[in-house]
Amino acid sequence: MACGLKALIFDVDGTLVESEELHRQAFNAAFARFHLPWRWDPHLYKALLRITGGKERLRHYIHRHHPPGVPEDMEGLVQALHREKTRLFTEAVLEGRLPFRPGVLRLFDEARSRGLKLALATTTSLENLDPIFQKNLGRDWQQWFAAIGAGDVVPRKKPAPDIYLYVLKRLGLPPEAAMAVEDSPNGLEAARAAGLPALITVSAYTRDAFPFLPRGAVAVLSDLGEPGRPFALLHGEAGGQGYVDVPLLCHWHHRALTNTLERRRSS
Ligand code: XBP
Ligand code: MG
Image 1 (cartoon, protein in one colour):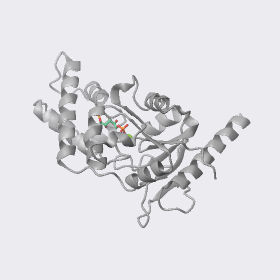
Image 2 (spheres, protein in one colour):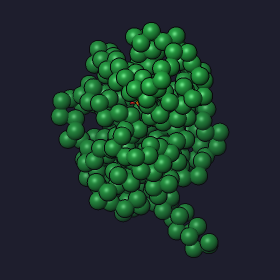
Image 3 (cartoon, helix red, strand yellow):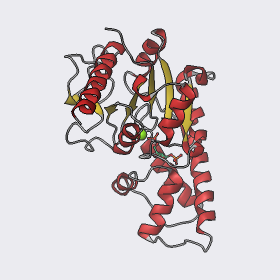
Image 4 (cartoon, helix red, strand yellow):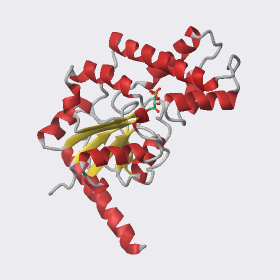
């Protein structure tokens, strides 16, 4: 089958790496450095993850939970806390291990060998990317990606489509030539609003976020799978396969485009 898929656009946190637990710990370590009696436990952090962007999340937490110790210059505190959190997060990534999730490197390799472009569309701060990808792809990691969109490079973060539109523009591709790979409802909404079909691989914090196959998703999986270590198919169909490869992505992409055309015809 001729495949109309020209690019794969990956989210980062939760999709390529299981990083949100490390983000949570970095936030708490920054609170301690600033002598603030704040603590985000996993339950609270899961709720706060509905707000994308670390600075936006901090502002939301302050407005919603009225924690003690907020000075007159709240924005100054948010900026300073987030700088410290980012320093602590990047330090932790460089010192520790934050491996790619199952199937990521295998799919990167296969997609590149078949001439598909790879790109990143993430809410996370640009500074977080270097340690994550250096550890997994080496010093020249940026050469793997035809376009990178991260954090504050756009005015509105996910679920707004801005970051996907930014990346598509840099790829020089229309949305129907690409597919997004995401882990969260905000990410799916951003991709859908930009006109891209999305494959969902749930993460530790989004495991129960998709009780059914959501509109705009081609399937919901536990991860990308590996030959001999199949993914769990949570929603949708995967043609009986147990790991995501380019032919399966082409199958989903073709079906998504056909469904879109049929919806347009019937409306
Ligand atoms: C996930 C986010 C980010 C991270 C924290 O981004 O929403 O805010 O939680 O990173 P994505 P920052 O899933 O789009 O990769 O503190 O740098 O925002
Ligand atoms: Mg994510």
